Image 1: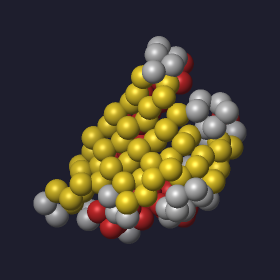
Image 2: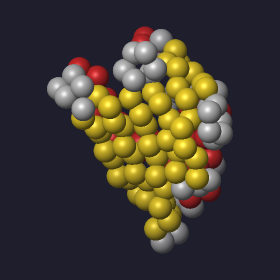
Image 3: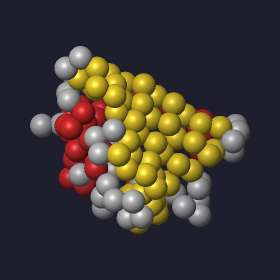
Length: 126
């Protein structure tokens, strides 16, 4: 299996970045619409446009520090982990999206897309 990793500094405190990851209206501003909640066991869908609604489930939550959930159950069967680390007056955001088949089209496509998406999070933070 293979993974995608991103590391992005965001000049906002962890609480603000956390909101952009866990509040549906903010998530939709920088990524996609979805009914996410930071509650272990919460099942939700993400509207991936041409790729359809993707089923996910929250696996792990550490408030303002860690969010881990499945992604595209039954399709890709991957896992996304967000880790937030305070850095100065901002936040270092780490993304790990793992569980891809090595060399797969999804790994290649999402590998080039995630860095651009992660950099957009700031547009959703008031």
